[in-house]
Image (cartoon, rainbow, N blue to C red; front, side):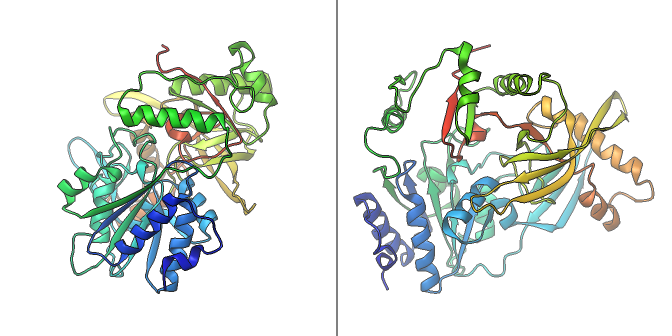
Length: 442
């Protein structure tokens, strides 16, 4: 059976045909890694769906992953196959290890012991977001802290007897992961040098999603050319009256309000996104500091593995408690920290209207603060838990199980989602996108 049997109903571009030919050869070769690169709209998802169908038809085990919950949900909806985050796929949530030293205290989830890895094909969509920079700072940490390295360990890609392969799918011209200066999953030299793997690739450049004459498509092509050449100090987006507009700043929010949904404002800086979110809420409710309300758009600012919702997922507030819970936590040798929680019910929509409803305690302080919990806040959450569970001894299984399930400790970390930074927006799709060029602003 040929892989092309699963694409007979489609008119493939030359780039797609070449990619399929290379993919089919890769599956029977000794190479470990395949990079399926493609511009936005070039048909990567089409190739991915047919590839998964082909692998199922030849009874080859396949595992679909993505770096974020939102990306996993998108690929699940578009392929009709189960897909999970890389974190959920490779780490064991039952295997929690306590680490305590003079400088810090945290738990970490060990890499899952994968006994069923043999002959599997692991496909990672939106792979440009995969980081291999050390991730620290969270109370719950994962593996070595190097996500890409842990993925290679889990798949046993370097173990000749496992016969596993990884296919990275994505656009290498998208933003690199936060705290990483490049997309390591698409860096052939890095993969070869660090992991000793053989890498093959294909790149699709013909864009099929948008029709000819698209100003957005033309602008994207110019930007991509600038990135490839290494000269991208500036670029010009020219208003065309069709799909690119340049409204005056004084009417920016009015124009946004009149635009059809789904819509988003994309900024460079967190500060700009917060300010625009507050302005929008002031226009909507008459008070920018009003507590979160029914109908507010929010975005997850952190992962919540207990609830199965992840950083970058959008939701709408379905209900919010009128009264919040506030406690001031004393910390040894530090100023006290005041924490405020509010009960909320969130609706996470999907393309098939199978809305997911999640209830929990949101940490209200996080809405207006930094993008990450500060060490003092994390410590205060831990001290608060211990004060409420004085009968539990740290380090015991009872303590670990209780802290994993605790609604206050595992609070929802939310940000308003009307305006988000470009990193948060990456991988999303909207009918109308408003951009704020605030890179050089103070």
